[in-house]
Image: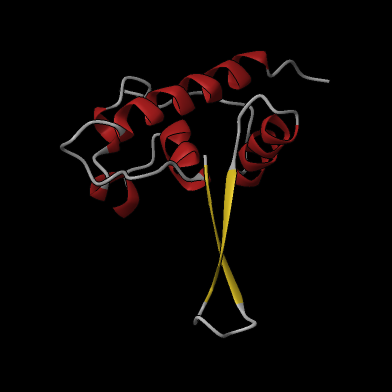
Length: 110
C-alpha cells in the first residue's frame, strides 16, 4: 500500500487556493468544480485553466508535479473520498429544465 498523504494535503491546499481565487474580482471562476481541482493538481494547460486564469493561484505547479495518482480517475477517486469523509464539502444544485418539467439538471461545486 502506498502513502498518498502528500497528495491528500496538496488536494486540500488546492481547494483552499481555488476558493480564495473565486472571491477575487478579476477572474472567471465563480465557483470551484472537481475539474478545476484536478486540472490544477496535474498542472494542466487547457481551456478550463486559461479561461478561469487558474495558473495564477499559488498551488498551480510551476513545473511538472510528480504524483502517484495516475490516471486522472485516481485523483477524482481521492477527491470523492475527501468529499465523502466531509473533509471537503461539495454542494449539489438541482434545477428543473423548465418551470413545469419533471426533468432535473444538476451542478456540483465545492
